[in-house]
Image (cartoon, rainbow, N blue to C red; front, side, top):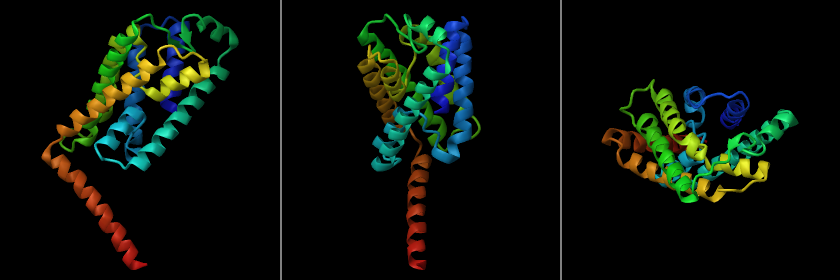
Amino acid sequence: FLYIYMTGMCLIQAKTQSVDRASLAIANFVIIALLQWSAKSISGAQFNPIITGSLIVSKHIKLAKGAIIMFIQLIASIFAISLIKVSNPSAVLAELHDTTILGFPMVETAEIKVLILEAIGAFFLVLAYYALLIEKDAPRALYGAGIGAVAFVDTMYLFNKTGCSLNPTRSIAYALVGNNYRYLAMYVVGTLVGGLLGGVVGNASLSEKADKTIERAKEDKLKRRSAAIKRM
């Protein structure tokens, strides 16, 4: 919720206050870095369904758990965009109506180009997640800044071309709340395909140490569960 709401409010400020693209990219970097650092130990910092989906495919989380997380992500996204809609004055929304969907840019890029560019951005975002957060040899203190830095580069490159959604539930939420389904399929398909490919490549590139650590964590969890059952 916080991720979608805060980045959504930044988009509105970018349009109404003439905030430049670099400032928007810096804001995305700060928001994502702080949320990654703060939520890793709670939920694995899975703020984006392309990350959750890739973790399901690479068997780091179970399908049922991942499906629940993605459903929560969708509901939280819809709630966040709805709050943006009701919390901004009607005059502001009217100003944004012709060129944005509640602040999210309505781009004029060809549909196939939107799909490809969103896929590329999603690919590198998920790849960074695997390389910096799952990889056990990665510097422990840098994952938030590293993933935020990828979001910064994606925003700088993609914002004027696609709006830089990189999140299918955000795109769905904007479409539903803003009643505008233009390019929705391109955003959803592009980000999902790119994210899943990023997960496949990221998982394949994990070090032997990381793979063993992941498997050992699963085994330890099963052992603790068995021990708890025996004590009952």
